[in-house]
Length: 125
Image 1 (cartoon, one colour):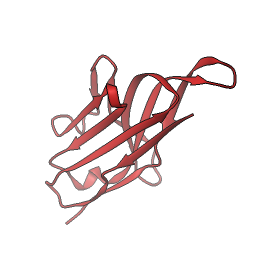
Image 2 (cartoon, one colour):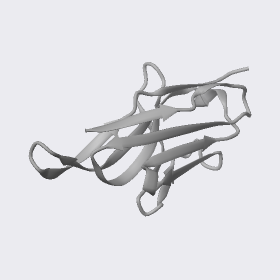
Image 3 (cartoon, rainbow, N blue to C red):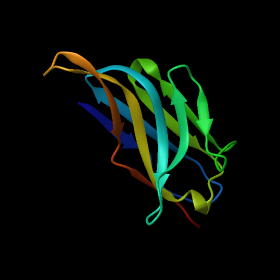
Image 4 (tube, one colour):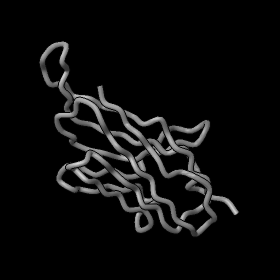
């Protein structure tokens, strides 16, 4: 199994910065892509940013130029640096990881998609 541990959410004033981190652990063979999604109660979860194993970045239009996603492949960790935060960035942020893991029960590699538990980001004065 693969576990994700998120950290770094909190309360910040408009214009401020926060950094979210996500660490993946477990029987990971390889990670193809890592990303951050966010969700406001009553709405659908939306993509914030993703990064592939080849360092290809993808950002939602609403965060381009303000957020930066990065990963450290050797440690299976990922970060999201969020600058110039706006009240509309308020949401629960979820870490997402896709890759391949080893399943000892069957002795084979399996594709996996895992989600973190979510961390609250609130932007308010």
